[in-house]
Amino acid sequence: MELTVQENLWIYARYFDLPYREAKQRATELLEFVQLQERAKDEVEPLSGGMKRRLTIARGLINEPDLLLLDEPTTGLDPQARHLLWDRLYRLKQRGVTLVLTTHYMDEAEQLCDRLVVMDKARIVAEGSPRALIDEYATREVLELRFAPDVQGSLDGQLDGLADRIETLPDRLLLYTRDGDAAAAAVHERGLAPESILVRRSTLEDVFLRLTGRTLVE
Image (cartoon, rainbow, N blue to C red; front, top):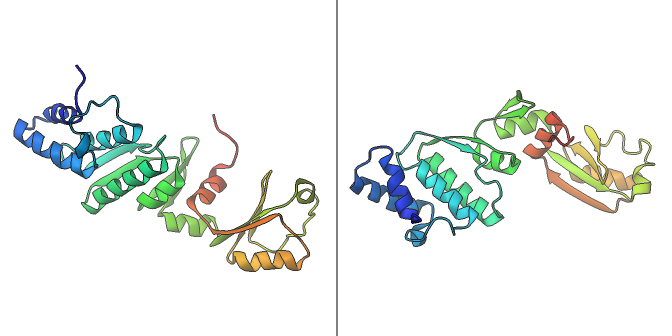
């Protein structure tokens, strides 16, 4: 017989010797916290991946831990489910729960982490707050330029001096600069006509790729 969502939490609570009445009360509170109260009497197996992930979080909180370990908690979730889970985890931080998580999503690390470490080949290559790492390893903004393939290969230093660092990718050029709009204007002043121009702020992903490289690691 398949367990329901609430039964799953009740049984998990018994692993910590919680009295049955207390287990039921905590299960009810946690299902509301992770927004699964309407699925309390549904079986677990048919739930979506996002719902199962939220149920896993609820199970991890059944004994009211001070520390919660999370291994890539939002991998495979759609954007809506990811953002809901981020909200729940942020609320846990506000309650004083310490979160230790691993993730390959740099936006997730930037959203949730007060302090993080960047690892490459099992070694720590940088550590600090998201803002501090961006300030140290990136610039305030990034200018992304796309040229026609035959044009990009023949620029021959025409962008030199426009940025603190220029990175050449197969499909575009990244100019790391303090002022993306000013750099874009300078590109036009030099008579260059990119197919597209994008100015964005630097992110943790820029930091991660600079520290670990863009080569695919299997």
